[in-house]
Image (cartoon, rainbow, N blue to C red; front, top):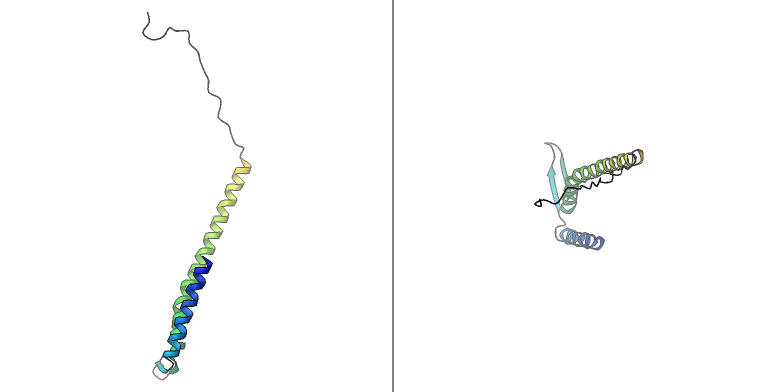
Length: 106
């Protein structure tokens, strides 16, 4: 799985490099009425990507952390419950014998 992730990241970096080489031009971004940011197009694309990725990555990490804590708590409670209560065995079945004749005989 690690090799597939590495291949995907290499392909994305090559695509970003090709995009950067072919679109290296100045871009003006109007932030407010008097504030204009002049930057290169690839820098704008990378910053926009990171601004969109960062909140979702943080949300994923916090959800994974919360689930790991919950699983750990549940595992500890099961471990404590299994140690504190002994395992009870079922009683042996009672076998009774009768001296009655089989059904249908007189």
